[in-house]
Image 1 (cartoon, rainbow, N blue to C red):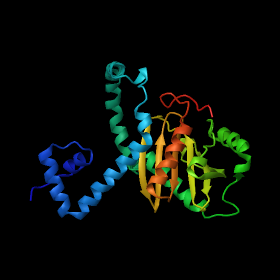
Image 2 (image 1 turned 90 degrees about the vertical axis):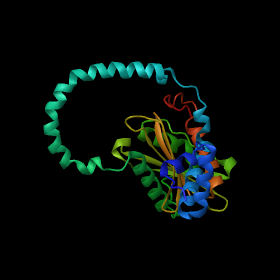
Image 3 (image 1 turned 90 degrees about the horizontal axis):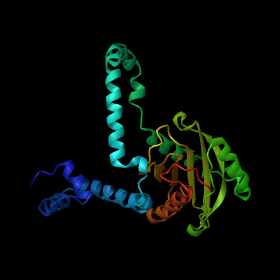
Image 4 (image 1 turned 120 degrees about the horizontal axis):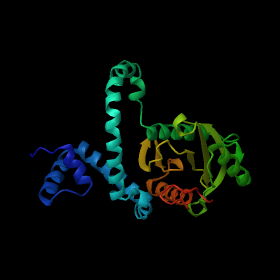
Length: 267
C-alpha cells in the first residue's frame, strides 16, 4: 500500500489534494480506522469554525492590514532592526543563562489553551450549583452588565439567546490569566431542560490578534475566539449543532459594532 504522510492527510481534510492522491488517501483511510478518526475530527473542526466564523471572514480587510501596507511596515522594521543587531549579540551571552532559568515560562501553554482550560474548569464548577450558580441574577442584567464591564474595563453586553431556547441565569466575576487583565466574567444561561451553557470573557490579550479555535476538553465543547477587545469562550455539553447555534449567536452579538475587531462594542 502506498505510504501516506501526515501532510497528505491534512491536505485531504482541507480539500487540497489532486484526484489521484485523494483516491490513494481514501483507500488508506478505509484500512486505517485510527487515521480515519483523526481526519474526521479535522473535518468536524473545520466545519465548526466555518459555520461560526464565516461572517468574520467575509468582512472587508482594514486598510492597516492590507498586504502592501504590511510589507512596507515590515521593510521599515527590518531596516531599524539592523541598528539593534550589535547590541543583541552582546546580550545573547547574558540571555543564555537567564533563558535556562526561565525555561518553564518558555514551555508554557499558549494563551488560548490556558483560557479555554480556565473556561471549562469554571463551567464544570458552577453549572453544578443551584443556589450559588451566579453572583448576580439575570433579573438584574443591567447592573450585571455595568459591573462586569467596569471590572473588565470594556463594554460587556448580555447576549440574548432566547432564539436558541436559553435565558440568562446571571453571572459572576472570576480571577483570570494575568495576560488577559487578571479578571474574567462568566455568564450562565439555561434552557427548559435545565441544560446550561457558560460564556467566559476576559479583556483582550496583549497582542490583540484575532484568533478562532474549537476544542473538546474534559467532556465539554468549547468555542473560543479573540479580537482586539476581548477573548470569549462558549462552553457547554450540548449536541454539536446546538452548540454551534448558541456560540454563533454569542459571537455575532459580542462582536456587533466592532470594526476589524477593534472598535468598542456598543451593546
